[in-house]
Each structure stands twice: as structure tokens, then as C-alpha cells.
Image 1 (cartoon, one colour):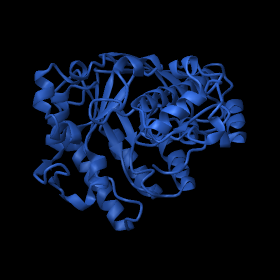
Image 2 (cartoon, rainbow, N blue to C red):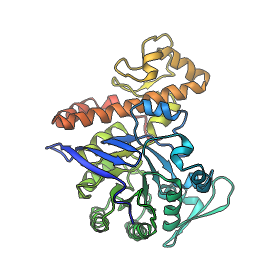
Image 3 (cartoon, rainbow, N blue to C red):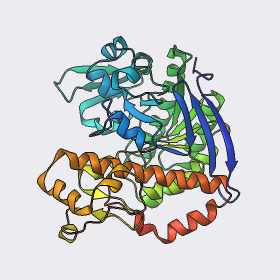
Image 4 (cartoon, rainbow, N blue to C red):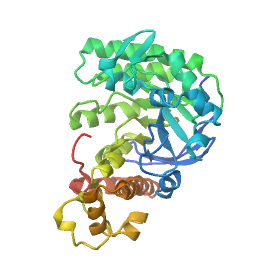
Length: 380
């Protein structure tokens, strides 16, 4: 069971010059207009923000993490609390990653075979077994609207043989997750691996499409490869996925990635970049990035971005924000995160409107001409 009836996805408009589309994703906890950006709430919280503050940015869907929540507080605690929505006070849709990314990021602390992955906890050194069945069981208990299959994400340095092994294992695990999924009010999405190998990407897209999941994710990108390779793989892979199902690009989310991902036909994005950068005093504006600790802003009493409607820009000046960051005040991370998330929501909102109005090609061309406005300080 994959929960095919838990969600409904409707494409409202398509861009004629690209694969870009605007749609509606209906979930048990609300409607999401696509394309959309999902802030990351790994531990059941978007860092430094209340659920209301996240909602006020225009966010309608967030992401949480299976591995971390299973370790602390434990899925049984969350389930007893009434599920993740009630536990964290978020009323909108939630998507949970399966823990597959930790197969990559915690590679020195885990062993993997066809059975699953065994992690040595980064908290206390205890062992945690994460099989496809266990990953689904945890997510069924957490209660998100969308859950992900367990996948094997190899690093960009993996050999062709290692990438093929990971792709084949991911496909086998997808079938096991599908068989283990026990709730029809949650939609289980498959994940496509294959690294930079077009033949593997095409093969996986065909095999996973035949299993008829409610949605599909592109994994294994932005794992250390060059930006040009990320965009090449993305542009090749996204159009291979079923046209009538939502497409999700996992863990990739600079402004350029969003624009080019949408052009390739992606509907859902998540990334820690906006909030992590906010905590490190790097803020986004329509005129370009602002390193708010710079002395140039000491007596700048204007808003961070005069065209932004977020709480931060309506209430506070660049000088005040610089003061907060300089003093290490907790409020700095809150106000910076509010703004950066709003900036990304405004970006995808602008793109959505441009698709609905038939002018995405012009929007994309203008964006690429002023790319420096949206450049980030590099990998986080």
C-alpha cells in the first residue's frame, strides 16, 4: 500500500518553453500550491522559529527527519502525543525524509548491506538499525502526510559500480517500503538515485514508475559535485518522472537551483540553506546578498529589503539587525530566518505566477541575467 489516495496532485498550467508547471497538491492537512519550498524542521522544529512565524512567511509545508526523531524523542513519544502535527504544533502538511541522507552524511558511523543500515548513534554510541520496513514503521508512527522510502545515496566520489549497486539497492528497498506501508492516509514517495549516470537515472525512472508510487523524488544530487553537473543531472532526470505525479528535489535549494529545478519540472524543494545562512548573518535580498555584520550597515536605518513584506523588514532596520548579530542575540537568528524563508517563498511564488500567466521564460531569462542577486556564499 502506498497511500495513493492520501494526496491529489493537479497541474494547472505548463510553461511552453520548459518543463515548468504550476499545480495544486492536496494533502490530509491542507492544500499546497506548487512549485513550493519546504523549510527544514529536522528535529520537529524550524530552528529559531515558532510554527506561527513559519506560517506567516507563506510556508504551507515543512520537512522533518525520521532518523533524528526516532533517536530523540522516539517515534513512540510522538505517536502518543497524537502525531508529529500535534507534537510540534504545526497544522499544515509535513513530509518526512526516511533517514536515507544519513546513510551518506553519517557514513563513518554506519554499515550498510541489502538488509538495511546500522548506525552508531552520534548521541551516545548505541546501535540503531534502519531497514526499509523500520523506516516506514517509524514514519507511519510519526504521522506525516508524505513519507519517503529508504534509499542508498552514494557520494559523488563513488565508482560507477558503487553507484549502480546503490541504485539497485534503492530500487529493492523501494519495493520493500511499499509492501510495509500500512496507512492509506499517508502517501509514500519513491526516490530515484543514479548519480551522474544517465543510463542509471533513466532505468530507475522506468522501474520506479512501473511501481506506481503517488510521487517521486530525485535524490543523489548536491552531494559534492560541481554546480554545472547538478543542473545537468536535474535537467535530464526530472522530465523522466511521471507527468501526473508530484516531483520532489531533495536537499537542493539555492535560488538558482529553484529556478532551474522548476524549469526542469520539479514541484517540491527543501533545503537548510535559508535558515542556516540566516543563523550565520548571511541574508538574501532582491538587490543581492547582505552580510549583515559588515560595518557599512552600522548606521543604515532602512529595512533589510524595501520590497519584502516579512515581519523583519516591516519592523527593523539593517542597523538593528547588525547590532543583534554582533552581540550574539538569539533574536538575530529569528529575524534573519523569518526574512530568508520569506525571500525564498516570494521567489517560488513569483515563479508560480509567471507560469500561470505564461511568462516564465522571460522571468527565467531576467533572473539568470541578474544571478548575482541570488548567489549564496557556497556550500553550507
